[in-house]
Image (cartoon, rainbow, N blue to C red; front, side, top):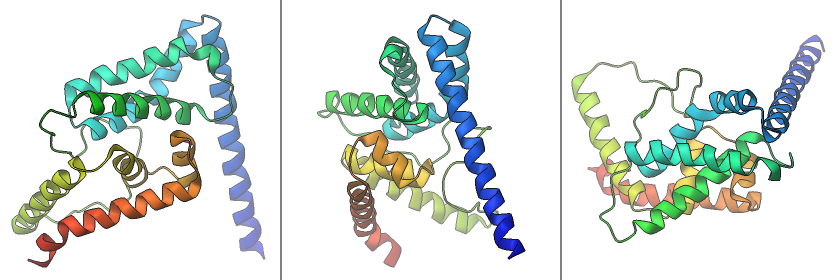
Length: 213
C-alpha cells in the first residue's frame, strides 16, 4: 500500500511539474507576442536543440537543417499571435518543422536522394533522445557490422515517404509519445500507430536480406 501511495505521489509530482513547465511556456509565448524579445529568445533556447535534431534527421543535410531550423523559429515568431495554447509549444514547433521539411522534400524530389543518418548529428547535451540502449562494446568487428547496418538503415529510410519517416524519427529517435506525434501531424492516434507499424515493416523488409546474410 505504501509503495502504491509513493508511486501515486510521484505521478502527481510529475504531472504538476509538466503543468508548471507548460504554464511558463504559455506565458513566454504571450509575452513574446507582445514584443518581448527576451521571452522569445528563452523559447528558442528551450527548443533549438530538439528542433534542429529533428530537422537534421529528416533532411540529413547539415546546411539545410541550419536554414530550416532558423526558418522554423522565424515562422513561429511571425505566428505568435495565432498560438492559442490548444497544443504544447513543442507540438506547435514540431508541426511547423514537419511542414517545412515536407515542403523542402517536395522541392527536391527530382534530385538524387541523400542518405539518411541515424548518427547523433548535433550537440544535444540537454536532452536524451532515442529509445536504444547505449552500446559500450569496443569490438572492432561488431563496430564495423553496426556501421554497415546503419548505412543500410539510412538507405531504407531515405527511400521512405515523408509521412512514415516523420513518425519513425519522432517516435524512435526523438522519444515522443503517440499522443504528441498525433498532435504534431494533426491526425488520429490510430494513424500514428499504423504509420509506425508500416514504417517498421518496410524497414524490416528492406533489411531482411542483410540481417539473414
